[in-house]
Each structure stands twice: as structure tokens, then as C-alpha cells.
Image (cartoon, rainbow, N blue to C red):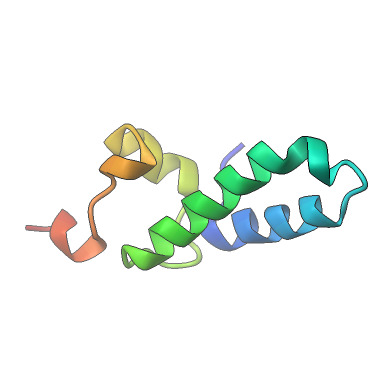
Length: 70
């Protein structure tokens, strides 16, 4: 399921509220890392997280948005 950056942040927040939060912590950390990394790299809150990561292979390989067009 593809989610936007803002939806990813909302999902992480929802998961933190869950009684299962301790068990979900690896997933929550990944959600927060993906969303914050993409925002820091200049992507918009309505950009789709999975599509960006799939295009570049991993979150670490995603370039800054202004570098993408060079």
C-alpha cells in the first residue's frame, strides 16, 4: 500500500498510541526515518514514500530533490 509522507507520519503517530507500541517500535522507527529523511531532502508531504524509495533502491540512496533534476 502506497502512502504519502504525511500519511506515513500519521501512521507512526497512530502506532505510537497503540498498546502494541513496544512490539511495533522497529516499524515506527522506520516510518519516522523514511518520512523525516524525505522531508529533509526536499520532498513534499504529499509525495508517495514507497514510489520514491523504489525508484532509488533505498532511503539512503534517495537524492535531495533539487539534485534529482541535475
